[in-house]
Amino acid sequence: MPVACAREGTTYSRLSSSNPQLASVGRVGKPHGLTGAFFVEQASEDPERFRAGVVLQVNGAPATIVESKRSAGRPVIRLDREVERGAELEIPRAELPSLPADTYYVFELIGLAVAEEGGRELGHVQEVVSGVANDVLELDSGLALPMVEDCISLVDLERARIVVRTGFSEFA
Image (cartoon, rainbow, N blue to C red; front, side, top):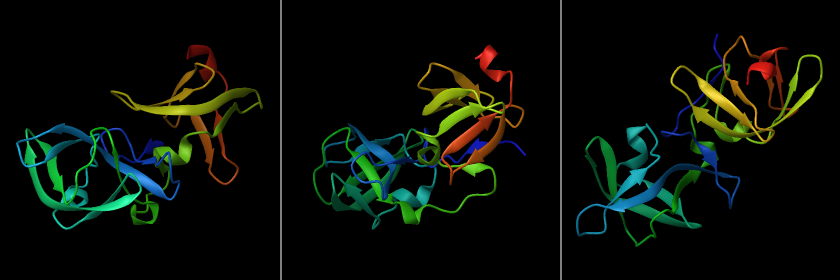
């Protein structure tokens, strides 16, 4: 079974930079119309995240979606209060759905130590990028490793460690 990251958004669900109990499901984008509505950038692929009545956290305070539609295939929402462009739209991490085996949210992988099976340390996960064929782990050492079963032999969230099969670091 391939190793994968769950897509909660067009990038991925990320932990809030200000509160680790929150996960980002989008970002306030450019305005749409004259009523205060805006496009949601890096939006969750779950259409229920942006329906009218849903409460999101924005800048540490709740904001209720009062209008929701789609334009050019992207969600457009209006909140019950003004928010600045670029602000994270967040939900409690506990509201994220559980995932199948060998599937992870990006926030679970960011910061994990990465080592080869022989024990050689390769760095720490800095970013997870969506690739054409598979997701890619970008490490703080500059290495880029494919998130495929041939490369990743173990993801151990409890020990904050990813083990990579020998030989992949030479090609990265």
